[in-house]
Length: 320
Image (cartoon, rainbow, N blue to C red):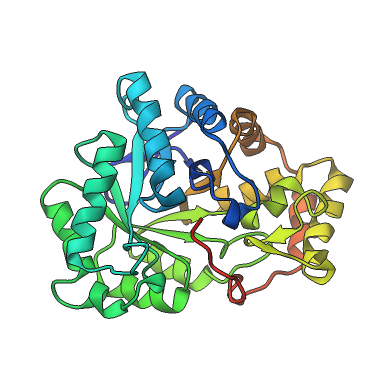
């Protein structure tokens, strides 16, 4: 698989990045669990494949995602040559504390779980869920500490990964971030991140677009997974999904392939973060990325329209 520059970081990554939140066993978010054996088999398939980019976080599964990845890395005797592993700095989950001290502790926890001595890419994660945004943005706060980790060489690059665009956009303007991660806000169903992507791309920030399947429904189908952005969805909410499925069926194309390539074909997007929980999903992702999609299908789906509001405005957030 070809590799592309990750902004101005000097890193080269594949245009697909595998996400590992669900590999940490998060049934409150995804509606299903993933045991250790299944996670281990999936990670082996990832490391044995052509993708060189993996995304995780300190708080995915309350640390289980990193712990499982760390076990897989140790099993292999280290990360494959040229492999880019990104993780995220997270708040203290019980208290919501997210100050400079917590940043330092978060990266120490991640280094220990993963068995590494530095990270090529380290994101500050989900500040909207912290107890006090001021702890993050003030002088000497979490953001200052994150960039200090870059100065010290513990992080090669610093990114911002979160949901709420009203908080994310001004933070991106205020700091010299190398990358961003946005999820669920640039899909076939919703393009709320359009303005942010345009501005960030113009500034040379690498854009990592996560959750192209809107939480899984565009990959698994409305009947099999009637949930959008991790929430149960009624018939009205699922109607756009079914319209996409109908159009795809007419052309003999999997809706997951269309959803994945919608993100991958955007020249502003450096890499698309795709969650997988089974070894066969790794192979399926590669097949979908290579599928030939007729121009008529793109035109037909574009004509269906899309939302631009916050797709998670009504989400009941649960970290597990």
